Length: 330
Image 1 (cartoon, helix red, strand yellow):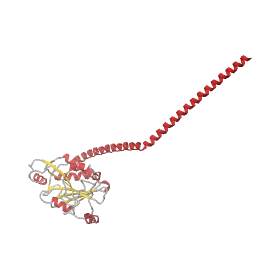
Image 2: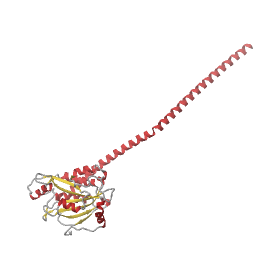
Image 3: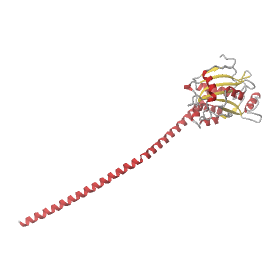
Image 4: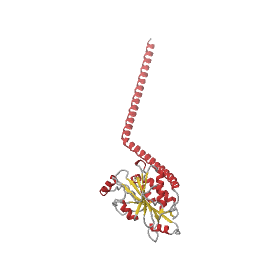
């Protein structure tokens, strides 16, 4: 595979216009965790990020359209990813988040310093990994200047684009990241370091969402001072675990949707009954009035029949007396 000796910057009318118009476009405020207002970027634990996406459907529906594989070019050659998410309704808006594995902070310095200490001294015991995702703010004029400020001198090794019809959602990405953290919660030099994390996220997303275009830019992935770094081979296992977790997630979402639909149906029926209650009451009154009139008509008919029967009986008695009188007279 041929690599280019240095990072390539391609001219694009769309990118040029985006750079010009960026300062005049307000960042969306309805997708927390993906789009962040101006201010200092906040490093978010991937598990916390997954929970944060549940607070907004729009956040969960943001689509990953591009990934960039980054590598620091000095000191310990830390590796990280840039994730480009597009807003589901405000289609001009794209958020870029950084993703990396470092170590839990210790008393000697920052989390990256702790991870670098592990690389320098293999005898250092395993320490807790710190997998974080960082939404960049709308105040960052260019992502490259932000990455330089955050990571120092760096280069980009690969770019990966997903077509609009096959982009992972932020929720799908968050579930994959939770699976990785669960798969290995410790930072280990010979298996589960930043090289393993960036490589496994990258390759797992390629495997799970095969409709993509990958472009190599520079050499050096999973290497330190030109030498390959040993890491665990976890892509297939992680993909299997992701599929199981995603199936459980979809089942839970389906149950919540069905419960919500049933509740809405009950509310509609109750509201329908409430709206029809005057009509129902009027129908009942009309029915009761009709039954009352029918009963009164039946009573009158009974009374008239009784009177006719009494009149006929009296007439028959009179006929009988007259017949008796005629018989005696004869």
